[in-house]
Length: 80
Image 1: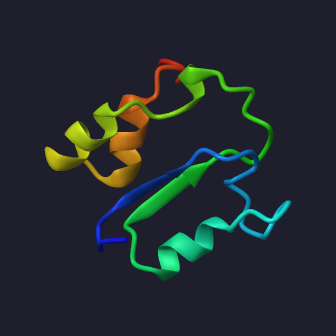
Image 2: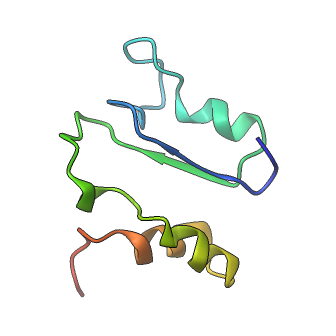
């Protein structure tokens, strides 16, 4: 993984910080130099609106922080 990479862990419970069901915890990706990572902590039920769209890379490349880029690319967010 290249430094600055964004990793989206799409496996069930892939967002847990401890090994769950044989999945690698998110901390493993950070240890190898990624800028950030995301994943679900419960079974995601494959609902697309809960996951970042590919526009995360567009927002990230235009200078948004990883958190801002993620928020801007998730369809299921609530409006404020």
